[in-house]
Length: 227
Image 1 (spheres, helix red, strand yellow):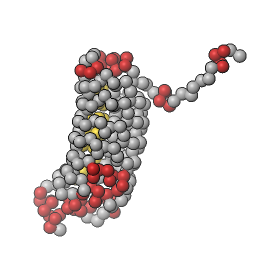
Image 2 (spheres, rainbow, N blue to C red):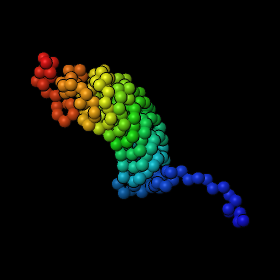
Image 3 (tube, rainbow, N blue to C red):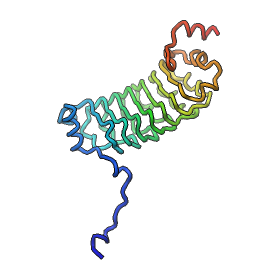
């Protein structure tokens, strides 16, 4: 038997079948997008529509403020420890199942994780400047899946449309959010379970200025409260 056949072959991980974010590839992409060749000088990085399965090799890109990672095959938020300046993180249309490893991003303002398979909102209350969370087309279903939002004191824009939310108690959770101004609930079964849905949400969520597909004007609020 040839010696080569005696060496135990390690099973391949699924991510090994995907393109990898290598330092060489990052250099090429920076060149293509006319970005800086010195990694830490770049404040944006475009890594979308590449089929990546893992976030990796971004250690030298410590000056990033916007990172585009949408439309890949990423299953976990990880390896962003050096991106402490990040303001916008785009991870929509991936394979994420959990919100994690973002607590250290103290300047993060916008997080987009729409079109994934996340079933619970968690681990984001420690981000002091987070104002926009887009988590539509995921697997949220109960009030408990959203309860963590009551700890996100600066969150003002929330998109949870087209999830599986069917628990009327979600209204009480959302009403507990101190600065909620914009809310999109479209495409959730709970809308049909709450009588006078729009009026009830306007009455309960005192700072709401935009609900679903149209604004909440002062006259509409006055009418809802009078009702």
